[in-house]
Image (cartoon, rainbow over all chains, first blue to last red; front, side, top):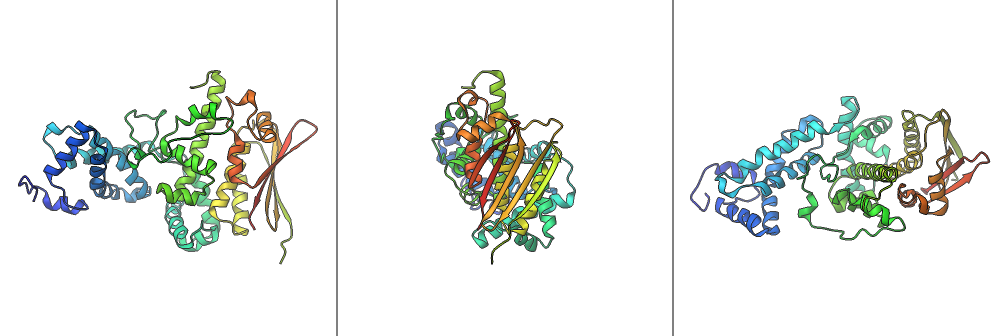
Length: 274
Length: 134
């Protein structure tokens, strides 16, 4: 039962949240977020509501995208809900957040996904590989070989190669896009995870590269920095950033493609972006 | 036991739709050399990074992979993109191109162990990417 005596939806709430949160405590956290810009309160709300995100994301588990990815998409919806929530409206955050989270996930399915037609079986195998690769990486303490992936997935090595290749057709998640984003209000996961790399000092090309890099989102910049300036492996980056190795691979490719294109555009315009 | 040096070559019309064949070849080699997914991915990205700005012009492009005991040499030729050549030779994007070219050296240094440029008389060139796997 909540501190204000309300018992409404108490069973559902305790089932979804890692620990029961009272309406009063929630309101206090929201008040601190909106009136005092209290990031700790925001983090607390995000943490408390992540089980809700997971629960909603799992509803889409059969649609061919990794649930982990959907949870990340849903997390963006959660952050938006927290930031846009109007305390005076008299509804609970869960009521307001649920459609926002679902909307974000649905938008992801609408906008993203497979760029070209890839047979469903290959898509499924690619998704399985994603999971198996993570498991094997932890188990073996290194990136697995093609043969190891094939054995673990109970498919042929050629099928693994084909699925990995077809994975290139997968539009990697632009969950955290900025600049070219279609949603100027997009929030970045790292906003609440904290800034890990405040400086991205580059070498010779930094004067030209820096403004272009700034158009990538924080996580993409971090991943590029760790890979190409810190010399970390994809496996190490995956562990540090908290995403799968295949996702790191996709983000690296996507970011490099974006940088290359932006620099090309910049050169054609004859006007540096800074 | 020493491994005999073998070379696997593929020549294709320079067509964006066919370039993924190089990736497939690398995949097959990675499988037979028991390379990790990560190593394969690095090699594929390195090859893509070299080829990305090459303009198709009705010509052919080749990839030869020399399989040696200690690793692989991937030779891409003939290439014509001069900004890329100059960048690789100088180890950084030349001053005149720094505003329009992503420094591929930055990328290759992290993906392969060495790279070299070999000029041809007709002005084209080859890039050899070396990856140690032993």
